[in-house]
Image 1 (cartoon, rainbow, N blue to C red):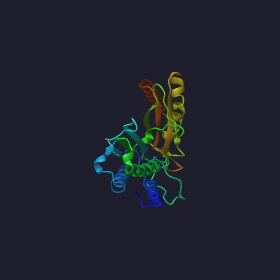
Image 2: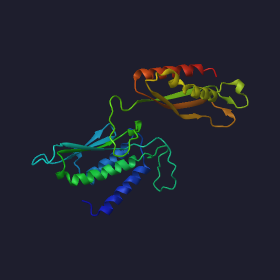
Image 3: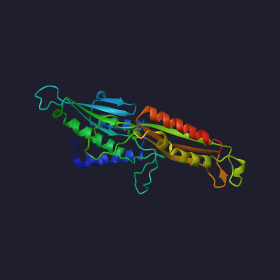
Image 4: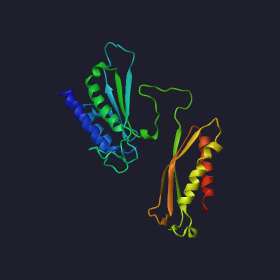
Amino acid sequence: MPASFNAFFAALASIRQHLHQHPELSFHEFKTQALVRDYLVHEAHIPTEHIHDCATTGLVVDIVGPTEGDKTSPVTCIAFRGDMDALPMTEANPHLSYASQAPQVAHMCGHDGHTMTLMGFAYLVNQRRHLLPPHSVVRLLPAEEYHNVPFPLGTVGVKPGAMMSHSSRFTIRISGPGGHGSAPHETKDPIVAAGQLIVAMQSIVSRNVNAHDSAIVSITQVHGGEADNVIPSVVTLSGRLHDFAPAVAATVQERTNRAIARNKTV
């Protein structure tokens, strides 16, 4: 056990701040994984053979309880999970001494807290493993940011059929010869084409997907241009499609391709 709980929680707070300073994206949590493994082995004293890689950059930790003697519960296994990955965004908290030092990567969804909490939890649970079922599992999972369900704390959601949508990313690159802002008639403007495409894509779902089905098309990034007096040669759009059926996804993709083809001559 730790010398004092104050020191124990202070150490965990320091770990959380370190994780916040050094966030890693989905499936790139290699340093986070190594830090957690080192803590579990050297601080929590969990045998290395009980710590296994999961989904490349995650960890599954087995904590073995008593397998003999009187059983006070029919439960034979319990599991606890948390997430490790950060978001692809810039942190705007300059007042924090431990703000993210990684360009365009930040723990803005609290997964640094998830990781730190499960590290401390595994430490304490391992000290009390004689009170546990025969098998307890701590799962530190990568790449949670591919989905998110807004259930209130303490709520378990169950429903027939699909619970979460299929998600796919898209990137659209619109290119042209570029030109001077004073002579748009001598070039093809990818910004105008991008604007028309953005508007056109807003009606793809409402006019092509059956009312009994569902889909969402969100354009979440638009990048183009570097100078006020220059028509850029490239504009990039990117975003996500969410759906519950492959046929719906195929329809949306086909209509998106049509909209792109119509805007090629702008």
